[in-house]
Image (cartoon, rainbow, N blue to C red):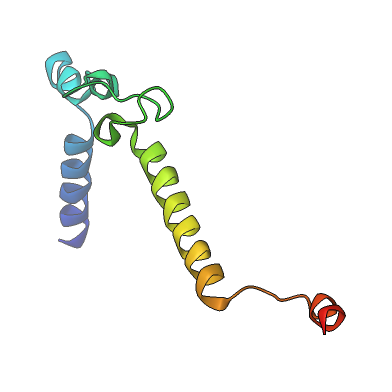
Length: 96
């Protein structure tokens, strides 16, 4: 009983894993691959230095780099402005 059940399960697995005809094998083959990645939707993206006044046309990675650089400069400039900078004590002593 157990041996016939095991034989049936093995036959079912074998039947499911191998295609019966060429048409069934052809349906399992991937047709397009990565060809769909070349289809562009919308306007073409450009480097930020080619069109600096249109951020909507920039490539995504260029937009991220420019945005992060701008925020970094803004934060650093604010820090320098509100911290007063480092004063030279030798210059202050020489004047007095």
